Image 1: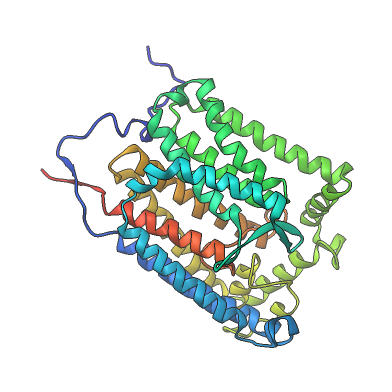
Image 2 (image 1 turned 135 degrees about the vertical axis):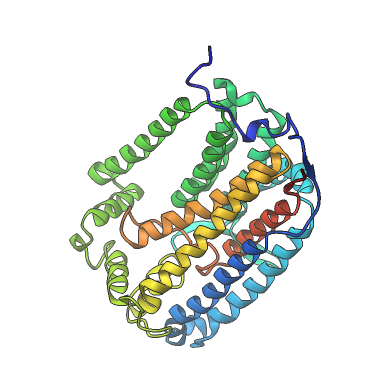
Amino acid sequence: MTDSRVRPSYFSNRAATKPKGQVREIGSFDYTILLVVSFLVLIGVIMVFSASHMIAANRQVFGNDPYYFLRRNGVFAAIGFTVMMAASFVSYEYLRKWARVMYVVSLGLLAFVLIGGFAAGGHQRWIEIPIIGQFQPSELARATVVFIMAYGVEKFPNALSTWGGFFRACGVVGIVVVLIYIPGGFSTALIAASIGFGMIFIASPFFWRYVLVGGGLAGAIAGYLWYQLTFGGGAGAFRGARVSAWIDPFSDPLGVGFQTIQSLYAIASGGLLGLGIGNSRQASFIPEPHNDIIFAIIVEELGLIGAGLILVLFGVLIWRGVIVALNAPDTFSSMAAIGIVLAFAVPTIINIAVVTNSIPNTGVNLPFISYGGTSLMVSMALAGVLLNISRYAKRDYT
């Protein structure tokens, strides 16, 4: 009799069989993914400039130069595009080979942040690298989680059938999450955890076991936030205040509720067609509108139609990524593709939920669009890997 608690795991059995009539061949990559990513990056460059030009022109720290962020973001986008295209032609087999090394290097960089990093925006998350300049290791670590988990699922295909294997996999993800969280990266740690545990859930032949564990983790996070809201002190008081501002932003309109209120004003002002690019009223009030809160400026300037188009583009990207994962030739590439999809989908959902005040405010970039050199280049590199995997998709011959 079949155990009803066990489900067939598509991804964990990819290497076991090779369907008849299907072959592994190198072809052209998925041009839909390439076009969607290019459109998103182009929209990002335009909207970062639109959201930031007034701030940059009025602040000495930016040289009173309205084109400050446009130039920098343009350089990041150009480098990112080069990295994406290079990754699309370099076989993903190298990622399988070097996954463990990448993981160890990422842990080393995260540890170095704790002792040699510097703070920006109130949190110690950056390090200085010669030639490259400021670098945020947590962004690289999120990507590394994708490849180390894909490697582990392929290397130990039956490990997730046992509790021991499950906890070992959680430990691999948990080390990264803790190192990201310690210097103040709660939101980034949450995303890394979502990617890693999401991949574990997809690869596992069990269902309810991981639903219960996931529900327990979600409950623990909710309990933590409730505790900070009710009894939090010190650093925890800030997170409690954010939960309070989520429930009622106007309870502290000039404090932690300020950004949320201005974001909602921007969204309300956009209407169907928006105010037009460069005509945002709230960009002058929202702190750093070109970063985490840029979607609010997009809604204000491009309206419901423009914002809806961007959501459609993200939906197409996720859809095509899932198609690539389903047609990838082996376990590693399947899991890597689905991990990359999660790396795009999770921060997109969180970012938009924050901007619309659907969840408490937390700093998460909108992939490909928000300003941030490390985030943009890592995201485009992941898109390049996804393109590369699409070149090796199984094709039917009958």
